[in-house]
Image 1 (spheres, rainbow, N blue to C red):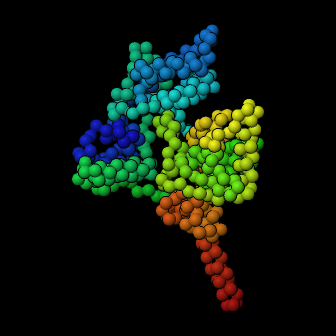
Image 2: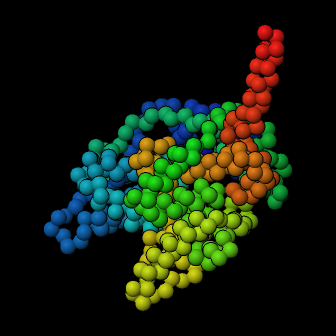
Image 3: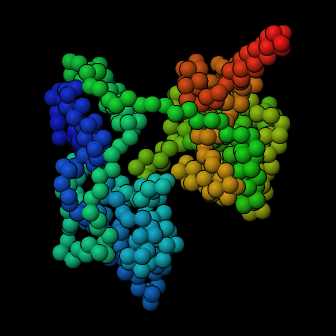
Length: 410
């Protein structure tokens, strides 16, 4: 988003009014290349012909075709592919075949799979997005590729505010390095964001989702349980390794965060750049012990041992690679839908914070448990229940006081 809009400009030539124009344009349309005129968004998707008589599996044929399109430049970095359902209908290829092919390409780092959005070709996005959306190739078929008329989709004030914060941080770094004399973002005026408090999830709803997970995916149920009990971020639990679990003392060591950026899997330090030790109760210890015993038993039947650096949550038999955080979010959403509950990973962290604060646990301890480095300010601003327990007690006190006065007057 930022590079296509400002990538062609020198840093020292950017001014606050220029950023204001960018924000105004994004309020009109989220595509920086949109000029307000109608145009066709070409999708340079190759023909995904599947030869049934071939010895190669269908998914491999599709993956090879897309891989060749990326290497040849037909599919450029940042190009968005049609949805799996749309490609299936346009090119007469089974959905499962397309999903398998895209998963393989994502493992290779050629495409980026995003929850709730279409796959995107990995790599640095070109600056001129209009040129990138031009049809490439003489045999381009708009109908088969799914080309569509551009529709303007404005960005929300919150999204634009996030873009402003990214730019402001980048300009502040450039100013510190003496690349520029001042931070142009300081004179820009991003849109005002009105925060809507989100009520905390009820304990019963959390229990329903975990119970649903125990039926179909016990490991996922344990993962969601740990999110609710520890308040850890999704990537922090994905990065959890066997040697980070101390069941004898009931402690989890949260030291790393696992993320996927542009199709690349990265194990890095936590968001606050600090590791922390979290206490866990005997019930949680028993659940973790059972989970690890199952992993050890499966390897023991093959004469192997579970390594200490194995990931606790992994689809690999040896725990060599952790779960993809995006897959975790998708799976958690599926379980919540099956349980008839509206819940996600962030909602579970919200649940942890609001329940601890409502039970009068120390704010600093709650913030430390969630990994907030602001001494509790972030916890109160983003995760606490909008109607706190203290406020409820205040209402009860006033009602009791008023009711008592009314009785005396009668």
